[in-house]
Length: 275
Image (cartoon, rainbow, N blue to C red; front, side, top):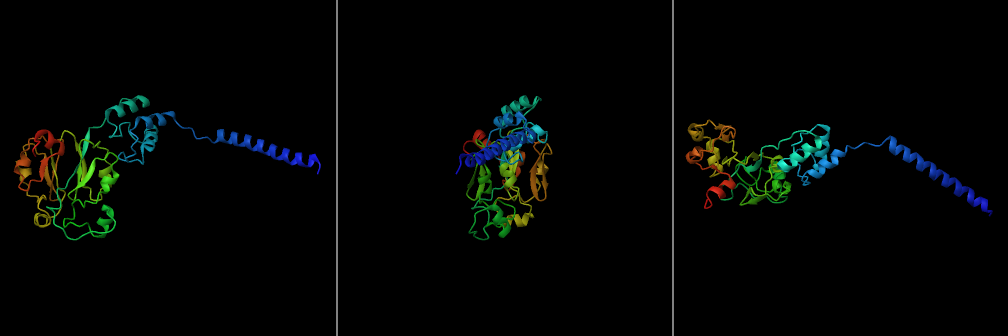
């Protein structure tokens, strides 16, 4: 075999490689997707927990949404004031952090208070239990205690205690991921300045609530009638506090015959360590 018979194919393939390389280089430049450098800067400023509390799949997705103008610069509650200020600096806009909030689980139907209707075995998941049998407790609106919210929290701020999800206020960032995942919408975000909360979400009649739980709101309206600020009303058989009106006087809590209006968890520690 002559040398030329070997060199010619090698030269052809080498030429093709060079040509394809040039073609790919040109294509990469022509079809390149330009990325705004602010996306990376904002992603670095965000906490990086990818908790989803902002409504996006993660911090990178939120960063892109902020740059595109689809989300406000202060969309991340978990990052707080420092994070909002840094993102505002990157975007060149004045930004104020959202009002600090904490998650509250509006249920006090622990194992000793809520009546049981069955034992749930198999997958321990709130969504599965809600679809299959409604959980093991008689109350159709209470916490099922399987901890889907615990799994969603990236800050280890929720734990199931005695059959009810409980928030650790020292760890809670108010991101809202737990509130989004709760199938019964028992978890709400309230201002950190709030002193009282209604730890019940039952929408059953008073008689039905009494039969299902020893710690449920019966919609008696005593709190509503005694509030001097018109800050609490019974809505769909359950008391709801309007924190924009509430003066934290505590009269509703003292008058509640079922004691379902209580000090928020951190207030119990700060104002009454022996609570």
